[in-house]
Length: 48
Image 1: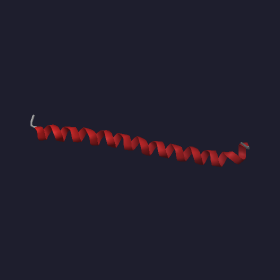
Image 2 (image 1 turned 60 degrees about the vertical axis):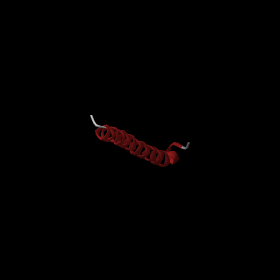
Image 3 (image 1 turned 30 degrees about the vertical axis):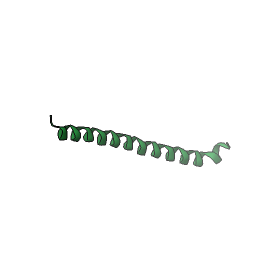
Image 4 (image 1 turned 45 degrees about the horizontal axis):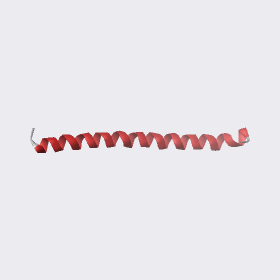
C-alpha cells in the first residue's frame, strides 16, 4: 500500500470517529435540554 493510500485510510478513520463523537455530543445536548425543560415544567408541581 502506498503512503498516500495509508494517509487516506487514516483520515477516513479519523473523520468517521469524529462524526460518531459529534453525533453522540448532539444527542447528549438534546437529552440535557430535554431534562432541563422537564425539571422546569415539573418544578412548580412537585414544589422542589
